[in-house]
Length: 357
Image (cartoon, rainbow, N blue to C red; front, side, top):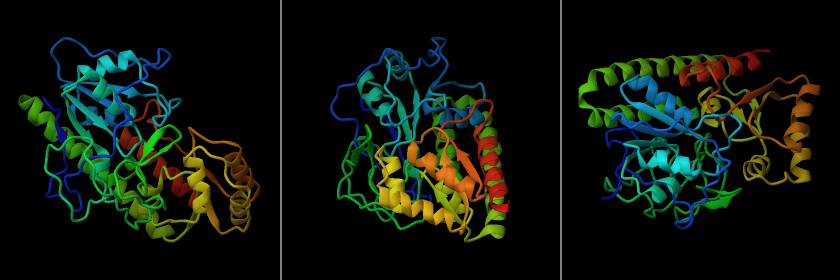
């Protein structure tokens, strides 16, 4: 029995039925004994939902409450989904799942390996498919239920939130720093509230299929969550009204969907972001260009990834601080004590405060 891939509704604008990029190379999966151990799925008959990261696990909980059991494979800000080494416990957890939520786009490729290795037939929702920037989302439909690894042509859009990279005519992506990356696509889609709204709708739809008796719970949870998304979008519109066109420097593309929605202009040299994202050294000429850009005083804020960084990022931070330019930290994993909605609201507040300083 083939596992079911949940595809975006054809009624959603620019969200066609698509299949994510290639799986981890081969059938082999390294099961690292030192990897973190998620909470074991229970055997009490409850519907099991497994999320690749706590970002998506929290969204499921917001919709479902206690009606299902949720396990997030990665839940610590000290863990990097790009390079995460799955454990035998992770594989067992995935094997018991009724529904799996992944980001896709090469961000959490470990989950695809776990699905294949465990022989899971769980339903799969891939958040990246709901992004308007997902390759081929315009004008290309794929039949619902296609296998996860089917090939298709990648065509990146020119949206300000995409990574400025060349496109390939295949879905394989390049192997960057130990993970398969879809060329031309910014995979950090959880920073796009509009995309996440549609992901939440897909989650509620799947949960209702799995537990029809809890439909009222899921409908209510979804309504509250979507209302929260609306509040985020209102806050972003307020930032845009006050700071449209303000220039920012972003060491990695993590928050670019959010900053684009806030009307901000990313002036980071392309070579800088590419090098940091791929775990490579920033070319000296590019680093010099970056520091001069910040020194010039036109940049209103510097945004960094709180979970990663190297000598070049440190130098950028020091340059910004010396120039009196605020530095804002964004993370990839949900911080302890936060929900998705409160986390994004805090990110927007921090961004607005930096721009207003």
